[in-house]
Amino acid sequence: MEIQSLYNQAVYLLQQLISTASYSKYEDGTANIIESFLREEGVGTERNLNNVWAVNKHFDPSKPSILLNSHHDTVRPNPQYTKDPFTPVIEEGKLFGLGSNDAGGSLVSLIATFLYFYNHHQLKYNLILAATAEEEISGYNGIELLLGNKLFQTTLDGKEPDCAIVGEPTKMDLAIAEKGLMVLDCTAVGKAGHAAREEGENAVYKVLKDIEWFRTYQYPKVSEWLGPVKMSVTVINTENKAHNVVPSTCSFVVDVRITEVYRHEEVFEIIRQNVTSEVMPRSMRLRSTGIDINHPLVQQGIRLGKKCYGSPTSSDKALMPFPALKCGPGDSARSHTADEFIYLSEIKDAIDVYVKMLKGVL
Image 1: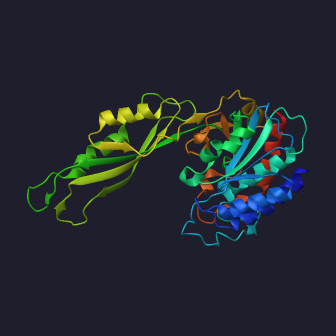
Image 2: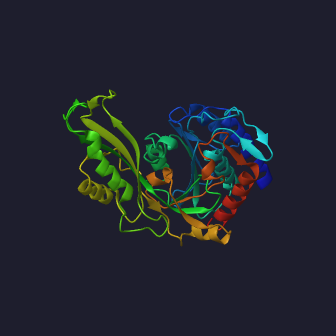
Image 3: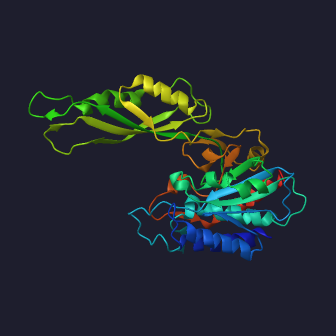
């Protein structure tokens, strides 16, 4: 298939996806659209909840595999939208709509790329397409569920994919490293009392020292691609709302972005030893990940003039226990913004780059 034809199909598909609400956990409508689109193109599909996947026509389980993955769930629209987030409007070369940039443009470009290679014989690698759910909430019923699915594993003869391209808005540059995420719930306990008298032990005052530590602490090891570990206090609460009561508890939330030079457990232990508040991690699933700069996919991208960088944001790449390259059309700065859009030229360029990148290894 020609790139122009694939591009036209990709834009049409993206318009359909934008028109259908697909908030995380409620992606059944867009899953149906993706299934129908692929079947109309003669592609046999499988579905695991709202995860749709397919393999190339001449799939050979004895060969290694490359996973092409992006997500079709979205966040809820920003209240500052001036356009209808579910109406795919094209103006001045931009396609507007919720999920157009994050990550609809990447998804339809990867689908087009999969179709380009679908009927090819004697590929060195199998291709697996996965349009997955719940990425925006790091949910358990997205890529993690699919990778553990019995049929998926049986199709691959019990093997993991050898590597993946994860479609997220990177301006088609190569995110070869990505920070992991650990969210901490912290609580200090004091003693309630009347604010007018010298009573109680103010839990707010107890957390101030801990919050200052989170603000100023510098981890000694710094990543070449991702820089330092970053900690941000993002929420703070007390149990009472009365102005005249000394609060007995104060809780706060810390967003910790971890690089590949530390394990989550190491960072957690450093924190635990330096603060007096009780600290509980919500999860340690979202690990920092990386792909070797000498990996064939990365090297092919470099040959195409794309630059390597470390991404501060997390994606489904964090849930893949194999090398994965994050690369896709659009700009991360547009994600989750009002009047989200993607340039049509970005989609066409992405299909061309993905195809050339894969031709270099297939």
